[in-house]
Every structure is written in C-alpha cells, then in structure tokens.
Length: 149
Image (tube, rainbow, N blue to C red; front, side):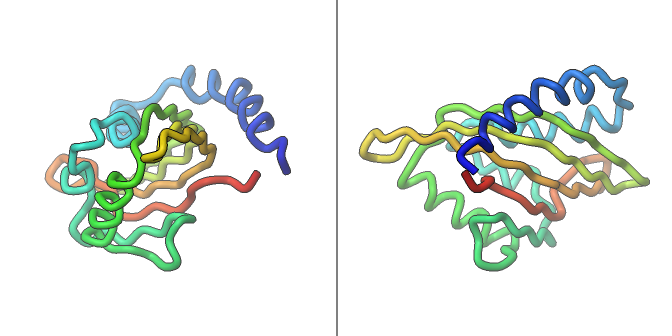
C-alpha cells in the first residue's frame, strides 16, 4: 500500500495526456475551470460561497457524514487556522455533461504545512457533481479525498 503515490503518479503520467489532450467541449472546459480554480484559489478566499450551490450536500473522506454548504465553509475556515495549503495539482480524468449537470473525475496532490512547520503531501481523487444555474457552474455534491498509503 505504500506504493500507491508512485502508482498514482505513473497513472497520471499515462492518463493525463489523454485526458488533457482530448478535445473538450466549451462546456467541459468551463466545468474544469471551476474545479481547477477551487484548488488554486488564495486560501483567504471563501471559495465555497463563490461556487457551492446553496443546497450542496457533499461527503469527503475526511468527514464522518455528508456536510451542507455552511458546514463545509465552517470546517474549511477551521482547517485554515491549523494548517495552510502550499501547492496543489489536479489531473483531470474525465468530465461528462448532460444538460445542466456535470460529473468531473480527477486526481489531486496537495502540499500543506501545519503551524509547527511540518509539511505533508496528500494524494487522492474526487468525483464532483456540478450543476449549471443562471449560466454558472456550481458544486452540488462531491465524494472522495485522500487515498490510503
């Protein structure tokens, strides 16, 4: 199990060119732009207020149960008090769109630093569901998180 990060890196190298090199529709590009932005946004930005639907209900691996939009925002702010995200990389695997609903699958790697200065790197995957309302793509739910070592 300790080889999972290495396996993920190899998979990203093999799969990423196909995912990135594929010809995405304008809609798929719009969805990916939102997903990528949430991983690159300044930590002080209330990203969830910007791109989470008011009826969001999401369940990351780090939560004991699904959380609504306000709970996500609260726990995000608390997490920022104990550590800061230094860098993140997201690798798209695929995006499917039907009408005003999109499903985005991707891998991520994230480097964080706690208050004591200890750095950790986390690797994982997510499946995000976004809906388009008034021309804007917003998160409606997601599932995923860090993979076990």
